[in-house]
Image (cartoon, rainbow, N blue to C red; front, side):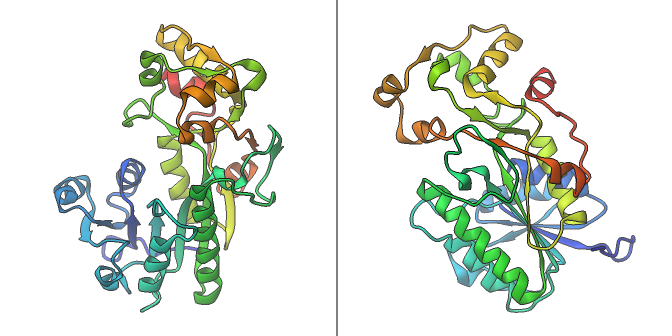
Length: 297
């Protein structure tokens, strides 16, 4: 799908959930697209405007504030998380209901999560694997994906779903392992450890842009790098690169006593994502193909 791209008629992109990754996308597309950013915080409007996006006030939890979105954009980049409770993503439902009032959007890119697969026992797999969400958070993401695909088929919209693992970057708040290392947080012992997947925030922003341009209709793509490391090995690597002590190792039984339910959920799912579609269909050449490359940068 192509969009007009001249000085007089640039395509319009609506970014929903314009946080760290959204601002990186703004930086990539500024000057080539007309950029709109939905925000529920009036305090962020100046920041978004300074970055190069026109801020629009609206709250995904308040449908009445979203009606103005109908007919505004050619494409939507949906980066907003689902609500904290329930099995359904009511925020995505409210957004799609507003967009359907006047169909102009022809492309939607949605950043989902690799957590929709649940625990895969360390297997390596592609996007054809069935989802098996084990947490309420992942169930709401599955609900959002289903709603978006239905909307795409019903309204003739090309929907690209990026399943995203752990996002990191040195200039991302909470996005570098050094903070955890400096706290001395433990990781699992080798016998209990799990495989994790990663993507640098800059590469994720570039994947979003590639999906806007080249994503196939109603298609899922793993937005991850080439790294195949267990979680403890990842933090050991980061510690070595940062010149910090390696984190202590504890058993899963000890982790149940010391960690929150959220922390345990991340340490209970092991999988290795294949990213062939990212490279072949979206034709994305990763700037940071491994976490070693990204952490060194």
